[in-house]
Image (cartoon, rainbow, N blue to C red):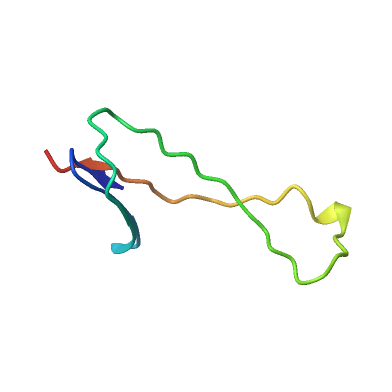
Length: 63
């Protein structure tokens, strides 16, 4: 994540995946969550909760 007074960029593995033109002049908070979009209606309760391992997160300011 990179932000300045003009733009906020979100990237994954160095590739920008989203850009927002919002003007945020204050520090931001990054929250990471898991989402599942199942193909069918059936979900096995024993498969939850889902977990993930985040190797690293980096946020930089353009200023």
